[in-house]
Length: 128
Image 1 (tube, rainbow, N blue to C red):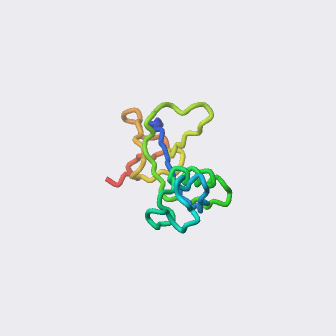
Image 2: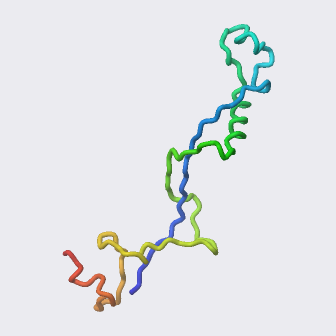
Image 3: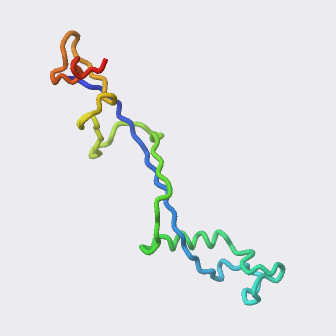
């Protein structure tokens, strides 16, 4: 019995998140403000003018700690933009080697006039 299949390369992307408490250092503080005054001189808001990029860089650096609790937020599976044969050493999942539901069975091509050797598509299994 012969079956045909098409091999596709898929990409699974997992998005995770975690929360990091970032210490506010001198690098992140506005250069012309007095951090001991309880806020900026012009606004009265304590953290106005902080350097966002410095804070994000520090958060990313801290996030590699084993103590950072990363949790999966979303998983997406789609066709990989680059298709091609599997490289040496990669396993290809072949569901046809497992038990197949009749409605999800692959198309089986047999020589005309001969039933499948295992009776897979015989009239006893055909609901029509």
